[in-house]
Image (tube, rainbow, N blue to C red; front, side, top):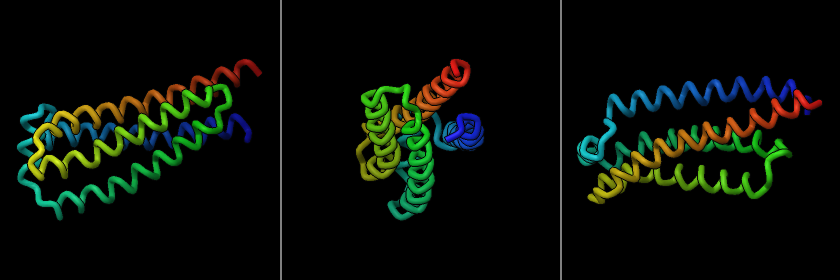
Length: 145
């Protein structure tokens, strides 16, 4: 695939992902809060039905965003396979914890308030780290060629 086209597509896509991530972080901070106590208080009052109504669309969008992002990662030959595999595992584990934590909190597992905060921000940081790896590889190759 043409490197310039790949770079353009990656920039457009990552712009959308970053916009969504930034919006999500602001909404999370404003609505839920950033401390374990505020996270516990917010999710403890939620019904399983209500949590599933929010979790399922989020899971669909994030899975699509991950699929597209990981395809871009797969195109980059300069990144070792082991590093790609670690990034894939990290993103999916954080994603699973982030999405399941609210349900577990609502079921009385208060420890998951800490997991929710760590998984939410860990996922956002790992996603940005992956995109930095992709862009670094694209730029290095573009300027080398």
